[in-house]
Length: 85
Image (cartoon, rainbow, N blue to C red):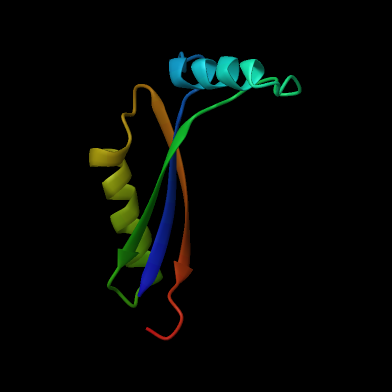
C-alpha cells in the first residue's frame, strides 16, 4: 500500500488572486516581511497496491484527468510506502 502526496499549483504567469489577498491580509496583520504568497492544493491519496510503478501510473492519470487543469496548473507528487500495510 502506498500514499501519494500530491501538490497542484498554478503555473508561472497565471494570476493567483487568493495568494494576493492573503498577502494583503498578512500585511494588515503586521507581517511586513512577507514578500509573496502562492496558493496550492494538497491531496493525500492512499492506494491499495503493492506495486510502486502501478501507484505512480495511477497518480499520473488522476492528475491528468481530474486533479490538475493542464492549461493553468502544474503538479508534483511523492509516493511513500504505508508502514505495516
